[in-house]
Length: 543
Image (cartoon, rainbow, N blue to C red; front, side, top):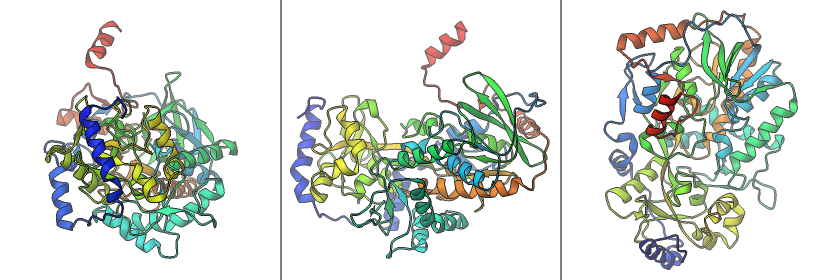
């Protein structure tokens, strides 16, 4: 047994190995609605006391938000509200803020609809959660399935809180999205006869999870990125973060960008704007590790909210049940739900299963937390981190030798870096912050409440209710990215050039003054700061 493990962990691992064959075919019942409610309210982080509070300013004043998001929203603008807007650097039909799957999809469709497009992205084009997504994308395109059944699964997974028109759009567009992606060159897994290979995800009643091994998002993002670059007439600004929207009497007229390489501000006037800035994982809500990319700091929420857009479901965060708990170097790394779809089981230190592995993610995460915290049946590492086993070798036992290397090759290579062979050894997992369930309110045209502003991807809210099912985020970014791109391009042909003002920011700052907000707190933060407090203090004193 590998020496990286303690004797206690080795003994627990031996129990997992000894019971593996007898667990094949073992069935656990789904929880009842009451049991799900009990486990969520008892152990899911959303219900932990003191972690949310009511907002004191803005269009969603009085509504509950997680503390970390509320802090950002109750902050002054990162730039002065008297900023000089007299010199325009870019004048375009459609400005797209964000270079992930939603932004790239929007750019392609907007360009096809005749718009002059500028895409500005915080990091490089494609540096986004899309690139990091592993498991797959849902679409009801098999004979035993339909968009109606997919719709019901989405609604149920979201706790019946979803906005119905958005769910309808997601489910109906899904089959055409798969075809569009394949036509662009995305290489989906297929059976020998050429039909799409698909598996179950948590909370799904049909096998509709399409995938590209365990780097589905990476395959999609590389294809979209190449298409954006190869078309040649979509201008892309990299390392250019949006830090404030520009408005004119309740209409969006552009944005101020900050070039993080040259430290220059750029003013963009646009007829329509698409917000595709992603989520909030790098806020590390309740100090959870995260699966998210470095730039996921909720910038879009801040800018849209100050400009008058409502937010919804921002009191709920999705914690992916299976984030890496060991080794510490990859703490929080996503271990795709596809593993459980292929048969991997969750086991406590005694090698006993404690939850059906394809419950919805919120229930699954709460069950793992309960096992570790209340029941004391988690496996503890030398650093004090607790987790449960994910028995990955069972995948090969159930599906035949070679399945792991074929279906989850990236994960196999990731663990081999630490001399952990997942074809032979289980891995330790614990929930990790993964997805922003809520966001900016939109309609099925991807329109926000601020006229001429569209939102697509994780920055939007309402599609997934209070919990997202696996595979619906990669679908969401394409469905609403395409819708935003088309509708923004068409609308731009009718929009008259507006003034560039920060009047909305002045109004919001005045509201913060009235509530006594902390003057030193500003947002958006653009990038997370991982320096220790003593390091920050030294930096301030010296510079």
